[in-house]
Image (cartoon, rainbow, N blue to C red; front, side, top):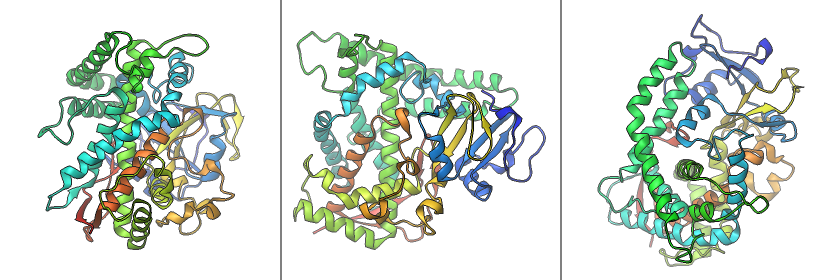
Length: 467
């Protein structure tokens, strides 16, 4: 998947070396932040070369909006996503545009995120939130925000997707599926990093061998759950009670086609990974910024108190969740500054010329770097690096093109579960702020862990029950 762009060149940082290219500009474990730090002044489009592979990045909101035009461009799979296909196959996130299973799965799963479906998930979200708060009750030390938010969101999506309780708040040790899934994902990340190196094929074979038992455990567990559900007698229970039930029991409305069991496994893995990583990151960044901005924290707590009343243990109804407009703006602003899915990749449907004057052909691809496009002063003003939830008030949002804010991707391949993620995040953040005052370590400096998604690292909060 060499990205040659017909030999065209773009601005790049100084110091390119023979063979390794621009590897010296990239910190191990922090490639995205390295790009932001070393390439912020290179203009709207720039390149890095890593061994034989050219990576072309877009940092301006205007050019990102151009590449988000679905009539002219479509999703491309970056090397990182290609590496994840070993794990998630042709799931919604990692499928090629022309794979028939993608269109089929997308069509079948759209009803899983209607208002009626969301009403079924709401009690599950409340149930898991209660378990989180129960685990926090009586804790006399700061809590690890990212770790606890990850447990919360993984448990929510596993129960909503395939009615499985991993016991994240009841077990002393995590369910074996969780470390196996994490290791399989790490393998995918390492494979993506190694793909451009000389001798990569041999290195990847060694890593594949070491990872095989993790992948086998994940696959076998999910295949067992799918087989068990298929074996349920017809007419028992609620066949469409979760995402798995919908995939098993719903034919395509026009063709009658159904997903096979392998693709169902890939879709479940996609929802598990993408569905918990992104939401836990969004909650963690929102809490970080609230802990640093007391005026925003006070405004958010005033809103939840007005809606939920004086009982600190009150739980939002489904109808109340959209009323937490300031809480939603806090989440939106956190996702603007640090979108947890920080990039997406685009390729043209046919040969064309960009506004920059560069020719782009099918097969050429560019990566939209969202933490850069989301901070473009041309759209967000001179205070673009500052946290300000009121950027998302109706008055200040009017006239801003939707293509300049894309935390859930773009077009037909945008995240299908974004309403699920936002409903859960608003619900949990509102409940947390109604129950607790929060305080962060004043000496903490935000560190970003780059996993499959972005996440605050080492961020802790002290929780005090509110009266």
